[in-house]
Image (cartoon, rainbow, N blue to C red; front, side, top):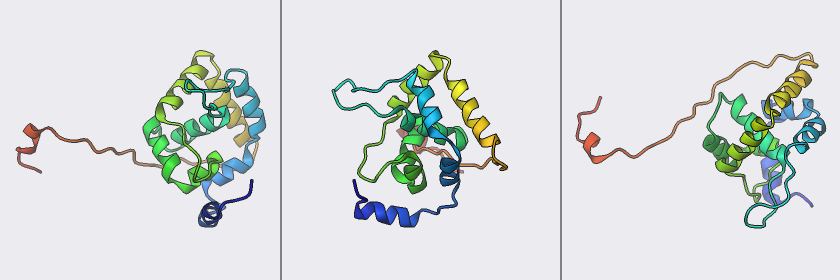
Length: 157
């Protein structure tokens, strides 16, 4: 399938040297995908639609880890709004993004099978095999909540 006009704009607007792109080039995802396949074999979801690939879900979980331990809801938001993350996940603009409940169930499945730590170790080994240093950054995970009427009457700071 060819690149849509929108996807060609996305490709043009994402830096090739960003962290997500660099990591995507360093990791042999085939090995990770083979490990995931031992614990997760997507066929269809509860409504009969094709289930999301395990590698996509795992990469989404990595995005959350690499951005300071984001909530699954924030990872979902990033996958929908951040062009670098979208590219890292292999998503096009018109693709559906797994929601936070799918991520939670996937993580639970990997954790229950004791595969989560093994997958993270595989990623770390692959990164360490290259002469690079990965430093930690910060991404703010903020949410807005409605206040009750009682707290709105109190003087502000």
